[in-house]
Image (tube, rainbow, N blue to C red):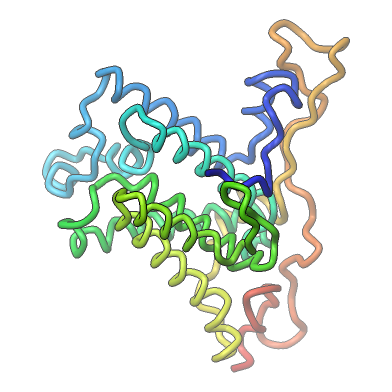
Length: 282
C-alpha cells in the first residue's frame, strides 16, 4: 500500500542499484543501508535478535553501546510487512531530508534533519520504559512513522494515495494506522512514532508561533560539519566517461545555500526561518 506520490527515482533511472543508493541523502543512505544489512543479518542468523535490541542493563553494565544504533536498524522478520517497512523508511526519510526539514538553525538542511532524527531516537529510548509492555525494544518502524508524521505536518496539502485512494499528506500517518488496526497488525509502534513526531512538530512549529520562543536549536557542530541548506545528491557521470563498475560521479553530494539561511536579525537574536521567531525578542 505505498503511496504513489513522492516516488523515489527508480533504480534504473540512475544507472543501477549502486548509483541509486549513492544518490540518497546522507542520513537516509546510512539509515536505510544499515537497516537493510542488519535485517538480513538477523534473519540469516549472523546476529541474534537479542543482541541488536535495546536492553538497558546490557548497555549500562556491559557497555554494549552498539545497541544505541542497532535497535533502530532492524525492521523485522522476512515478510511483506518488513519489505513495506523498508520501502517506507527510505521513501519518507529521503523525501523529508531532501525536501527540507524544519529550519532549526541549519537552513532546513541536513544538519537540521540529523538533529531531528537524533531527538527522535532519544525520545524512543526515554519513553520505552513506560511502553515496554506494548512495544518491542526495536524502533525502526517507530522512527519511520516519526519521520512520516513530521513530513506530513510540513507538507499537509501535498497529494498522496493509498491503494489508489487519494488523500492529503496530513492524513497519511493516520490512514496507515487505521489500515494496520483493521488488518489486525501491531500498531503501538506506529502510535509511538506518531506521538513523538507530534511532540517534535509542536515544539518546533507551534510553540514559536504561540509563545515567540525557539526551543529546539540545531547544535553548531552539526551545522559546521554538514553545512547550511538542503542536500543535493551526487550527479552521475556520462556513461561514456564512467570508470570500472559504472560508479563514477561528476560531482559529489553537497549542500546548497538555503533560500532562508540562518542570519543575524539585526536585533538581539538569530532569525531561524520557518518554524521559529527571532530569539531575544520575547
